Structures are given as C-alpha cells and as structure tokens.
Length: 252
Image 1: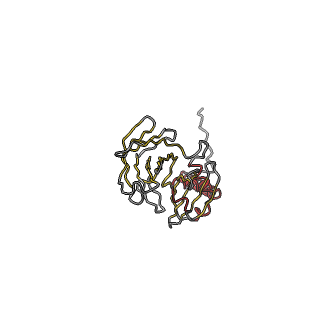
Image 2: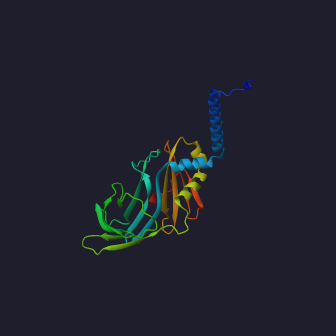
Image 3: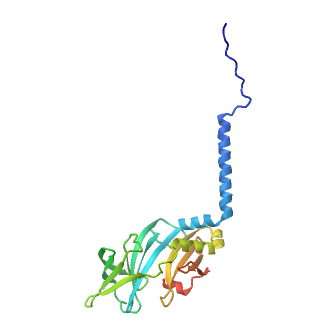
C-alpha cells in the first residue's frame, strides 16, 4: 500500500515582495512624519541644535590682566576659518588669541609688540601684530587651550624692563559654560530665530565699563543681516536681550 502525501491547503492570503516594500516605505514615511511633527511641536530642542550647528565664533573662556596703560587678554575657542559676519556659518577652526590693548596713546605709532608667552609648561617667543582697524595687538596660536592652564606673558620693550602679566579668568569658578549661555539666549530669542531664514551665532565674553564684572554675550546674525543678542550673567541670569547692540558690548 502506497502512502500519498497529503496536499497542503493553499494560503488564502499571499504577502508578495512588492507589497512588503510598499508597506516598509509607508511605515518609514509615517515614522518620519511623526518625528517632524514632534520636533515642530517642541520647537526648542530643534532650534538649539540648529544654533549649535551654526556657530561662527565661540570663546570658551577669557583670561586677562592689567598693568598701567595696558590690558592683556587671552581667549580660546572655535571660529570660522574664513571669518566673515555675513549671516552664514562656515567651517570652523580652533584658535587661541593673545590680545594686548593699550588704554592710552603710548603705542600709537607701534606696529608690533614682542614678548614671551607661557602656557602651562610651554614657553614661546611671540610677535603681536597691530590691528589694522584698531589700536590693539594680537597673535593667534591656532589651537584649543584648556581654561585650567596657567597663562603668563612677559612684554619686551626695547630700553625698558620686561613687564610681567599673570592672567586670571574673568568668570568665577561656578560660571555657566558657553553652551549653557547659548541655550538661554536661544530661549530668549526663539520667536525671532524661528522666523529667520537662517542665522549664524557668536558667543563672546564682555566686561562692564569698570571691568569689574563679566557676562556672556550671545549674538545671532540673520541671513538678512538683522542682529539679535542676549547678555547673560555668569550664573545664568538673563540680563537683557534686544536687536540693537548696546554701546557697552562694543568694547569686548
């Protein structure tokens, strides 16, 4: 007696490869739509991410010192390789700038200053060139320097004893970071930034006229060249925000 293989019942529903592909595409579109709607509804995180991506300059910290008629500053961070305030962010590069600013006309005809810069255990002879559009002198080391590093500078002027500066942080130890300052500024100017076609971001440190207090200054420059800014205290308090740059911030 021969046993015959039973015939299997044909499935009533066949799931073709074509239908599987269509279902996968539709699912992906639905997920994408939900994600877009979620980000649009929340607003804040998406705008903050855009602001962080549009950095044209961010100074992570600033150290400074004074002596007679000179103010010495040192700050490090990232900025556009092709620096241009045009409302469009570009590729960034690290920087570390030593800046010497006379507070009188003692170096009015001087074109460069020489000195010895010491950062942590590294010592280097430097030449600071005069700013063609101002009276300060500066040099860029082209790297990121940690805020914990000790920074000292000895100014060499021919025929005079060397003048030594030990630079100190202008912000208190418990100050908020530049990233946190940017978040606060984005929240303060969210409506203006949401309406802008595009913008670039500048995060700097400014001092008051007496150089007694320091603040974070966050500036947004839109694609149509409208400026929005926020001034934030070291502890994260919003001091003020506007679309007109105040005179105090022009001294940074």
